[in-house]
Image (tube, rainbow, N blue to C red; front, top):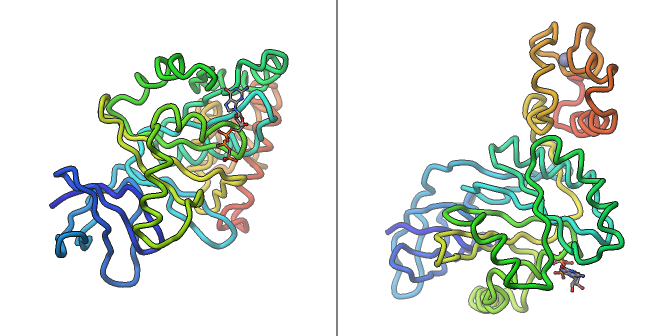
Length: 295
Ligand SMILES: Nc1nc2c(ncn2[C@@H]2O[C@H](COP(=O)(O)OP(=O)(O)OP(=O)(O)O)[C@@H](O)[C@H]2O)c(=O)[nH]1
Ligand SMILES: [Zn+2]
């Protein structure tokens, strides 16, 4: 039977099977390599459990990595919904990193600007996002105060897709999830009990079904970092779509756009076409990647 992984706690998983039932599942062997969003083939074990026999081919895999560890986030994701808020101030660094992480995994980033009801600070937040709007990244302005309005705005976006909700703490991610998936809280508690992990934990990534619109929403814990050490240079560059037309003008095919002569990106930077702030961000991310000696 086939199914989809909806939560992962270490080596234990909850799998929603194609018949609609949910089973606690495990993978034989040490290396698991299974993550939330994976489609799997399982063998039923008794009445309640299942053994994961095979992870089916992935459309993509979103990673984040910190220090020496690379962590799988979720698989088979169509779009990354990055929640930022009018208040408190969001981190530009984290936002840029989330965009790079998404684009390098061929996942579309969408920014949700939450708490637009806080009109006093709204203009400043909007201004800070203008650079991302210029890059063609959709920015959707929302408030969780009006649940119906929020649903009207977001549900069409989520239809027929798997979307991952990401955001640093206090941006309003839980509030958004509670409107879209009212039973989410209860579910998390249920799984925690079933898996013996005790109380409700916010450290787990979970996938929720939106049956009316054939969509899936993945909730991830609030993160204060989005490490990208696992990426190579060209993958980092994918996160900077404004570079692409100038990359073609670089003299060297393996140009890192940091110091090479005849670099199209550096020329555009000098001419003020590419923003200094964005190029600095690119450099910062690139220099912390796995093989810094190369640059
Ligand atoms: N004014 C206003 N406040 C909001 C809105 N959405 C959320 N909040 C408030 O912002 C605070 C943070 O919201 P949460 O939903 O807990 O944020 P979170 O991103 O899940 O934060 P963590 O649980 O720390 O990960 C709460 O006090 C919410 O009531 C909104 O649209 N407008
Ligand atoms: Zn270059």
